[in-house]
Image (cartoon, rainbow, N blue to C red; front, side):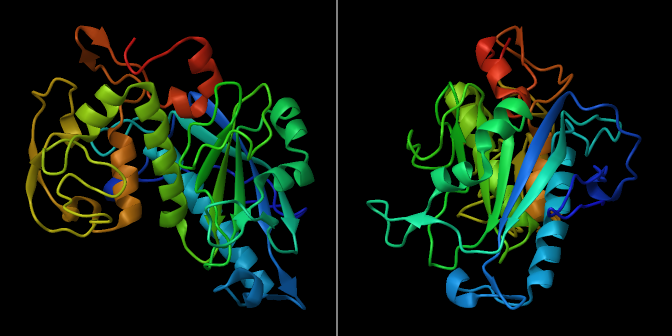
Length: 329
């Protein structure tokens, strides 16, 4: 990965390999997702200030390197995840390609404010967007996502994902219409914790995907794709098909599921499945689940109508909404 330092600059995208298979030469992605990285590193004399972060210390250079490496892995996982059923079709092309357009760094604490209902101060996303001049990045540079690298540590509250734009806030937040500036284009803000790793960062995206698709068509996505625990459908971030509780990614109990041949009306081939399919690893589960979403050239139908590429709602939300696109054509 090549990074500049105004921080860090745009990384080259890497193809990932599903389940140990060699990655084929990828076809061009259908949607480009330009990303702006924003880092808040409260540092004193080259050391992260644990009194500010609550639980993260260490050298500034070490935390920088961790954020850079984790960003690379998040991009890799998200691109790989957008390859429809790549665990069965290694030639599947990604629907999404992420490009870091720039990276900003502030050697200071996250700005916060006292939001009613929160025990600790809430991250002030309006202040961050004003500081970086988000309007110019979104409206002039085409940025669709802002990834904030910060901390949690019980000293600040944050939203894993937050959205603003002409269609409202559809995100894993309290959907406060005033906590981000609203422009004529939609953008989504993800807030990562550099005290954690790539799985936790990708989980932010998982919940955003769930929020958007559930908003578009709760019956098809939540009731038929996700299904109820133990029902043999596809599950969601916290609940794999054999899950019985939140974060049940290492459950060895075998169930029958149609996740690899999911069809809205049922009838797909069911296979016995447990955590061995994703090696008991949460990040591998997230990738596997994302690859099971109806993507490009999915060939699926619901009530005699073709399913769309559901990644459209992540890669081009405004275009999908203007076209009144649904999960079914």
